Image 1 (cartoon, chains in turn green, red):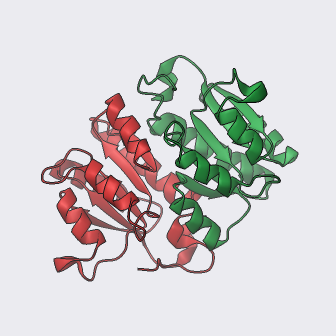
Image 2 (cartoon, helix red, strand yellow):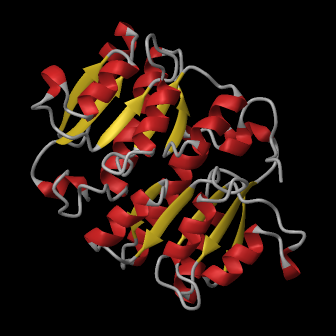
Length: 154
Length: 157
């Protein structure tokens, strides 16, 4: 009811190093109720370059939502979360942590770093697709995103 | 799939000055799939006393989730949000802003102050109930809450 009204697709940034999980997320989001545009980067270094529009990312859209894995090579999700949430320009972008970890210390640390929510990634294919659809449903039809309200990204 | 297994009801703190909205939220949550225990306070001063377990609130449970209105007498939701998210002991508790305001400035400010999500409250009764159910469904069956990780069920308060 919210995001649909803005007339442009929802921009999602998926930060994920597993090619399988990327493929599954792509498939699930293709069938999403809300028109969306998925960008994918494979680690935290690329995620920060994307968010800051550095290098080849100078013309990328500002994400409306970030789906962030925790365990990745080079720069992990915790670091991305800490940097994004401490950055005045980036901190209002909702970050959904989507990880296989169910360790309580990861859950607590993520909320302390101001993750907007923490979701543990099911191993089962169908359940993973259900989780992606639940994220789509809640964040894009129930929630008002910072960019829904007429704010123009930057 | 997550919190259902922890064996105790989910503790929700609703900070809301409208008696009608409190009643509607109570009704919607009474029919929720997940067993929950709703506490209600009517403004930001009471919310902070509840969260700090002051005065008559010394025995209250630590909330697993806070539903926070923005516009309230005495201390408004923006102040509560800022205080909670700057407090080392409270900042992990997810805060869902639930308000009639759709003002761009309110939405941006709330996310800037680390609200976990911002939901604008529908005026229509049925739609309000749907929104409360959507919150319940997402936060209690899809999300892992800080207090419902795999090893412990209680926060450290």
